[in-house]
Every structure is written in structure tokens, then in C-alpha cells.
Length: 214
Image (tube, rainbow, N blue to C red; front, side, top):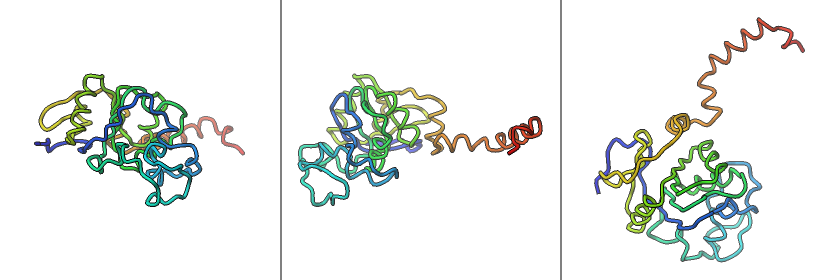
């Protein structure tokens, strides 16, 4: 398969999770939410589905019993960096840990028929690219995933390729697109205007000095 050389975001294979309404408690169960760091959640991604035994913090994943039927445990999907799913992915609570766990596992892109709003917003805040496609396009991606085919996500052109063929175009907010491409979160995007902010604060101090008196 030929891949375009001038890709502008990611090339990788897909892991197909053919389920509707995958909620955040299924993505990362509540017992693993004690940490506020963004790392270390990958081993417990989809914990209730990946393992046969009950999960709890600080377990050694190598000593646990794998569910061999679950997609992420199947050999052909090892190393996949694009997760594809169905409707209403990421529903449930607003925990950012769900996004952190997907990224810590190694996913760069999540493609689904639809997303829960809060999860969708959390993806952009953390640098995970969520793409929404209609059902007919998702069927094509699921077929390619089962064949273990790579896809190319070109964020600049807003297109998904399989080889030289365009699978689908996709929509994305221009600001969010720029943030993903530049690797910036909301704070980083604001700091691009640090000189303007400093100038505003200095002028504000001159115009209204009483505001700054302690």
C-alpha cells in the first residue's frame, strides 16, 4: 500500500471497538482515578473488558488474566494507534482520565460515529484528535481495520486516506485544528498572546491604578 509522503498528523493501524455508548467508566474505571497525573493509566484502559480478573490500583498487569477475545488483546491489533468505535463514544462522567488513558495506551486518534460533548472537548484539551464520521464511512474503516490496513490522517487537508484513496473528509473547528497541529493546550494557546496580555495589563495599571493597590 502506498502512503502519501506529506502527511500532516498521523499514520497508523486501527483497533476496532464495535460498540455503541462506550462510557468513561468503561474506558477507565473509577477505582483508578486517584492520581491527577496524566500518565500511568494505559495499563487499565478498558480494564473491565481487557482482563478476566477484577482490577485495582498498583496491580502488575503481567500477573493478570487477559480476556483473549477483547480487541486490544488480539495479536493483529497490537500497536494500533487509531481507535475506531460507534455512536456516543465517551458518554458518562466528565473525567479527563478517560482521554489520558487512551493517550497513555498509545492512541493518537479516535474515530467514531458520534461523541459525547464533554469527552469530545476533553480530547482537544489534551491533544487527542477525535474525528466524527457518518455510518457508511465507519463501515469502510471497520473493514480496513479487520484487514489490518494502515490509514493516514491528514489534519491539514482534513482527509483520511487508505493508500492514495480518500476514505473521507472530516470537519474540525479551525482553532482546535491549529491547537492540535501546534501541540498546544488552552494555556499554551493563550500564551501565544503573552505580549498583548502584558501590554494590556500595563495600560490597565496606568489607567486605573487604584485597582492594583493592596
